[in-house]
Length: 233
Image 1 (tube, rainbow, N blue to C red):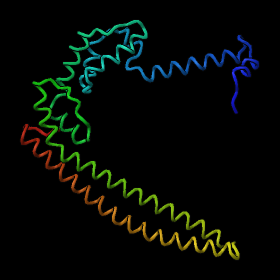
Image 2 (cartoon, rainbow, N blue to C red; image 1 turned 30 degrees about the horizontal axis):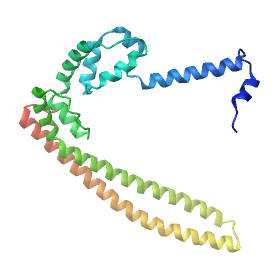
Image 3 (cartoon, rainbow, N blue to C red; image 1 turned 120 degrees about the vertical axis):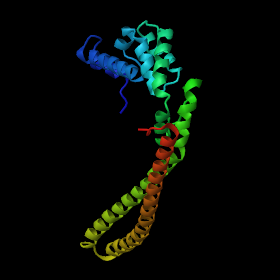
Image 4 (cartoon, rainbow, N blue to C red; image 1 turned 135 degrees about the vertical axis):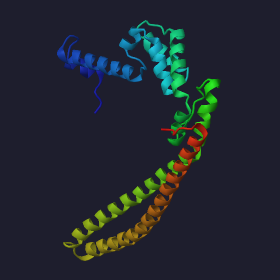
């Protein structure tokens, strides 16, 4: 049912508790929306610790464009980002982020590199990233294969539940209703046979993909040690 503003006005005058509740609720919702989108809180903006904020962003591999989001967040409070301090902190943070082991971990997890590392650090970072590239692809394939097997398991469980329901209904049905339920049970039984076959195939593929992913990761870790003299993590 649609409630017009006129109806609300009649329900409570400008100063009534109902009217105030509507206003307060709207303000809370608006503030929640703003805080959900903002990259920094008012407290963080007012702290002025732009070196630390930049360092945290650098350690996360955030692009420099992140500063524009901070400008917007802090602009609500009349505060401007100290770009020089932020840049110095971010550069220090990138020194932690742009390491071969981090590149390896990101590639293994299927995360994209956003071209944030300075030239002096990018080469070793990308070397680690490239070493794990195939292993990351294999891991993604294993996850997809397991998801396919899970879908087949869920389908089979649903069919089993349907068969149980139909079986219970048949026990009390008569005539044409019973005949229709019997036909439905046969269709479900045929579908169950097909899904069981699909599940067997999907589980075999999931096992094969998981083995391939483990082998690819072990090989990638060995290559990383050979290249850098230490394990990636």
